[in-house]
Structures are given as structure tokens and as C-alpha cells.
Length: 209
Image (cartoon, rainbow, N blue to C red; front, side, top):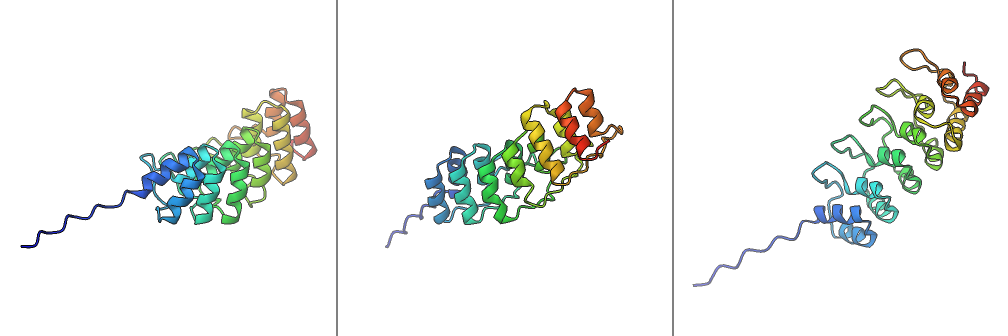
């Protein structure tokens, strides 16, 4: 009697391995796993993709390897982050540069109802804002707090050099300087109330009242 062959051992799951490699920034391993057929849409327990974790850690090489393989910048995690949205919020300029040719979905919103530009402006990520402005992103989008990117620059910014720079960038790009918050308070009024004279001057020069 011929003994039955032993059951074949399943190959190790490559999805979790890819997520781990991306989170650690091991770009060579990411490339190897992708070549071996690791699923680019694999997610961890929080719904985070390998690309999202590469963005979180600012692992540029790993992010580029994933994007070159076709990873989506639009995969949304449980907290509503996508690689594109998080790259804007964290000011990941090199990764944003790599994402732009992939045409990220500009209509996806974060957990505050905002686009990638709003938190980038709030945090004064100058280089990231320059890049985001080339994407066709909505300069006057209003988030769930009732704030545009310009309002967030003033309300949550410190009026310093970086916030002056991003205010000038969005105003020069065509952001409406007069869009008020839900209480009818304009960006100029907020800037004056906070003593942000340089930002207030920029808003006035752009026609804000």
C-alpha cells in the first residue's frame, strides 16, 4: 500500500510580511516581496495599507517601491487616513512627489472632512503645500469644522514664517481670502484678533476684508 503524500505546506503569508517591511522602511525587502506576489492591498488590523505605513514612517524608498508596483494612494484606513491624505498632513514632500503621477483621488476626505491641503497648511509644511497646489486640489474646501485651509493657517497656526509662507502660497494660487467661518468671522478678522500682522497683511493684499 502506498502511503499518502504528506500535505503540502502553505507558503508563508506575504501580506503581513509586506506590511511589516514597509512599516520598518526595509525598501529592498518590500521590492522582493512585491516581486514575489505580495498583495499590495493587504491591510493590518487598523485597516492600514503597506503604503500608508511607509508614509507614516517617512520611508521614502519603501513608498516608492510600493507606488512603482501599483500600490494605491487612496486606500482608506479605519481612521479614514489614506496615504495621500497622511502624506499631506505629515508634510512628506518626497512621497507626495512620487504620488502625484498616480493621480490621487482628491475627493476622499479625512476624519475631519478635510482634504490633504488643510492639515498641510495648518502645520506649515511649506514644501508639501507647494506640491499639493500642483495637483488641482480644492483651495477653498471647507471641512467639518467650517474651516478652509486659509482659516486653519490663521486659527491653528502661529503667524510665524512658515505660516506666512503657506498663506502666501495659497493666496497666490487663488484661495478666496474672504471665506468666513461658520460664525461669519473672516480670515482677516481672525488674523487681527491673534496679532498675526504679517498674515493679516497678506490677506489684505489679496483682497480679503
